[in-house]
Length: 129
Image 1 (cartoon, one colour):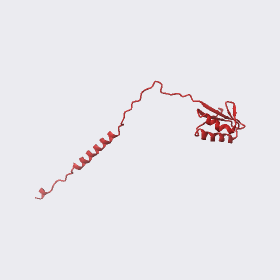
Image 2 (cartoon, rainbow, N blue to C red):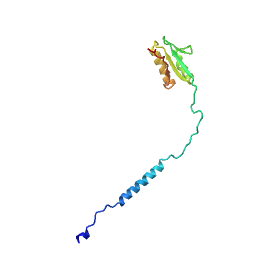
Image 3 (cartoon, rainbow, N blue to C red):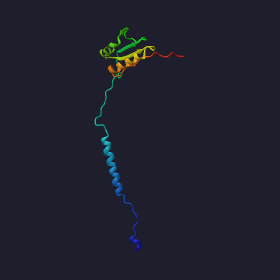
Image 4 (spheres, rainbow, N blue to C red):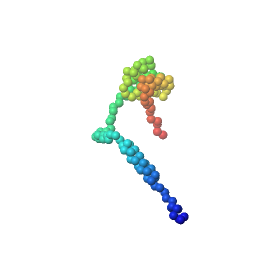
């Protein structure tokens, strides 16, 4: 009689199957939402590299602190107007190593205002030993 009442312990797998089924549904749904909405096919080009010819505005500062553009002296008072009249191209600053530092700072400040801080400082290559 005692043997009839004792049942063998069993694990009910129904909740485990329900959880696995819900995880499968979740992952399938998230995979469909992660695909791009539009498939964009870009055309191929023969010449994909675009070469732009950029104008360069070279302003030189000589050792005495004077400003030059194409061998023409520009007075310090007219530099701001000159830079605003020539907005195109890259501003290239060529400053003599013996030029006063204040001349460079003044020109860099003007470039900051008129060129949004975008300019290039040219240097010469160091001699090879």
